[in-house]
Each structure stands twice: as C-alpha cells, then as structure tokens.
Amino acid sequence: MSDDSGSFLCTKNILFCAATRRNRSAELKPLRLYNSDGREMQPFTPLKEGMVGLYCCGPTVYNYAHIGNLRAYTHWDILRRTLERFGYAVNHVMNITDVGHLTDDGDEGEDKMIKGARERGMTVWEIAQFFTDAFFRDISRLNIKEPTVSCKATEHIADMIGLVERLEKNGFSYLSGGNLYFDSTKLADYGRLALLDRQELQHGARVEVDENKKHPLDFVLWFTRSKFQNQAMTWDSPWGRGYPGWHLECSAMSSKYLGEHFDIHTGGVDHIPVHHTNEIAQSEGAFGHKWVNYWVHNEFLIMKSGKMSKSKGGFLTLQSLVDDGYDPLDYRYFLLGGHYRSQLIFSVESLDAARSARKSLMGRLTAFRRDVGDTPIPQSSDLGDSVRARLDAFNEALGEDLNTPRALAEVWGLVKDDALPPAERLAALLDMDGVLGLKLDEAGQEDAAGSVDEELADLLRRRDEARNAKDWAAADEIRDELASLGWKVVDTPDGPRLEKA
Ligand code: AMP
Ligand code: ZN
Image 1 (cartoon, rainbow, N blue to C red):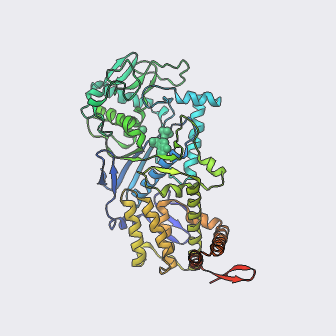
Image 2: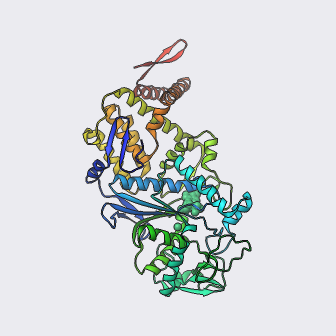
Image 3: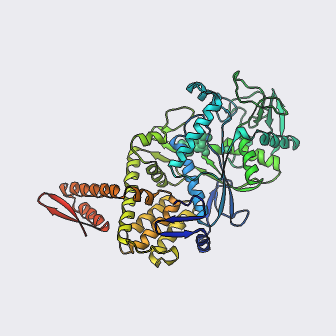
C-alpha cells in the first residue's frame, strides 16, 4: 500500500504511522529552501503551524507534457513528500490551463489550443480533455502524488472576473483598444521577483510592441479583441465578451483554494520574468499585501541539441521512453540524480545508467527481504546508531533545499554497507523510498525473481568481461558486490557459476 493518503505508510511487515513521523520531525533540522523572491536560502516557516499551502503552475493542455515538463512535476512531488516527511500537512493545488493562450509568453503569438485542435481535428474542449487525461496518466506512471485540488481555468472564469474587478477598484487597470490592461507603473515594486529594472527596459525590448499599452511591461487582464476569427472559448464580462489573460488564472485559483496569503508557489525558471512577475503584480495589487512567502523554481531539462519546447514540437514524451523499453520510474531515478536548481542534460546513456541503478536497488531490497525472512522489520525508532545516522544524513540532504543527488548517495551508502544488519537496512531503505517514490519494493515484490536474476546475470557477465580484459580490480569489485547480495562465484571449466553464499 502506498502512503498516498498521507495517513500511513504500510508495506509487507513495516508500519510507520504519520504520528510517529510527526514526533520524529521534532528531531529533524529545519527545512531550508532557496527562495527566488530575494534569491537566497531561507529556513522554511509556514504561516500556520503544521500546515503548508502549496501552489504549482500546472500544464497547458494542448499537447502532451514533454519530459522537461515532467521534470518540474517530479521535483515538486519531492518537495511535497519532503514537507510531509518533515511533519506538515500539505494542501497542494494545481491549475489546468485549458483556456486558449498564446504561443508567446507576452501578448502575441497564436492561440495554442486552436493550433492543437486544428492539428488533431478536434474541438478545443475535446483537445483540452484529451491532454488533461494524458497528463494525469503520465504523472501517475511517474508516481507523482495527485494534487489535493486540481482546478481547471475554464471552470473559474467568475473568480478571475472578481479579481479583475478588485484590481479595477484599486486603480490598477485601464481599457485600451478593447482590451483591459494591468498598469505596471502603479505597483511600486513591480518586477521584484525577476529583479527587473524598469529604467533599463526600453519600449519593445522584451515583448513585441502592443500599441495599446501605455508601458511595455503592462499586460492584458481581459481580452475582448481577439485577432482570431474562430476564437472558441469566450465568456461575458463587465468589459465585454472575451477571455482572460493567461496570468489571471493562477492568481484567482490559488487564492480561492489557499487564501490570499499562502506559503509556497512553484514553477519553472522560464516563468520568473513574465508569468510569475505578473501573477504577483495582479495578486498584490488586488489584495493590497504580500501574497506568497516562498517561490521555488526548477531549472530546465535540456537536450544535447538545446531546449525542448512544447509549442515548437520535436520533444520527447514519457510514452516515447516507455516505447523504448524504459520503466517511467527509471526516468524518475534519472531526474533525482540532478538537483532541481541545476540544468540537467538528457541522454540515453544517462537514462540507461539510471535504469540499471534502480534495478540494482530493487535487487538489493529483494536480497534484504530474503535474508530477513519472517523476522519483523524494526520500527524506525528502533534502528541502531549507524543506520539512524544514514537516515539523518538522508533527511538532512532533503531538508537542505531538496538535495536529491546527496539523498541518493546516502541510499547507496546504506545498501552497500555490509556491516549494517539487513533488517535495519531494509527498514531504512523502505523509509527513504517513501520520499524518493521509486517503488523499489513494489517492483521488487512483483518481479523479484526476474529482476534479481537479471541483475545477477548482468553482474556475472560484467565480471567475465573484466577478467577477459585482465581488469582484476574491477572483477574483484563485482565479486564483492555479488557476495553482498548473498552469492559466491565459483569458476568452473564450463565458466563461472553462482552458488548461494
Ligand atoms: P507548460 O505546460 O508548458 O505550462 O509547462 C509546465 C511546467 O513545466 C512549467 O512550470 C514550465 O516552467 C516547466 N517546464 C517547461 N519546459 C521545461 C523543461 N525543459 N525543463 C523543466 N521544466 C520545464
Ligand atoms: Zn501559473
């Protein structure tokens, strides 16, 4: 059983209840996060004790999510699971951008939803539902927890209109050329997240020129003039029939479900200069006070050939990796090998390495289970000092701005340390996987025999290759690895054979 309910994590013969974790959290060092708003590491302090309001910018559903988008959601899942590990109840809200928006981040470009619908011969509503379903299938395959609330932009138009009315009342908007604009000059610290320097920005330097704007940093709150004759998604509003500006939905929906001041907002770094800058401007302009305490931004997954782009096409999907024989969780392992604030280069070689590493961990876990047999697995509070120290180091890595590469190194340190009792290693590994979400046990139990056989055969083959190449050190290392899994290599005239140690 998974711990998706947030209430308990129960595996074959281990039970850590949430209350135990909450007690243990008293021993944990405070969680620290890098806050893009201020550009520094900060201790995390929630607005309400024990609770976190978390908002993640969701997918635009006019195409499949590419594996770069899925990097973002995987790291936010790690953020959520880490917060839960540190004892917080997380209210996780994510929007679904199903309103047609423009292919450019500014106010120009082609409507993405219409483009997607045209290319696939569907209506815009059908295209949005089709790719929303595909997105949830992808995140489920990556073992990403579903948000507590997933909200569609098209179902919250009234909330967006309400927010714009507040902006209008507070003097932050103006009508021009049929559209309603946000007046960026009215907000004293407009652009603080992106460290924008208003003086340096020349008219037209950042976005294409829109003659209706008073200032190039102004942005549309409500469109009534669409340049698309076939605009399918429009609604009545006090400013005429039309549709909302892109940034509006996140301000309106996050405050609806999390309140007008909440803890954490996430997104990719690409959103800092425009989308998130404008979300802050609208929200703080409407509410009259600070809106979000911590901004957490992930860096991009890039291909050797450069950036992947949903609107420009030519990207990899999770399904394309599955079609090439990978388990989606191999990709999750690959992602955890990089820190979320560093760019990560995708390559087949790295994905292969992630696959064999994950398979190897599954093999270890199965070997621990075999050694432990029916003996009860210790509770986390009963672990010896050495394993406890590993777990503490693992928690510390996650608590220090979600350092998953360091956390993975602790996992390997634990499983490879043969001086530690297998029962304790098993208990700690299962506990660690509660955050990593690699389903090491589930997969291990489902095809334990298969994966172990494969891993053993692979190790035996590699040892043979090392011996043929007279690389005795490598051959000995592999022999030791086999021994740690409980197998002895016996060299016979017919070739090497494995015997139970
Ligand atoms: P979209 O569906 O295009 O709005 O993107 C969903 C999320 O993925 C946003 O937070 C983007 O910032 C993020 N994102 C887009 N491309 C990448 C990439 N190549 N690597 C990591 N995150 C990305
Ligand atoms: Zn957003």
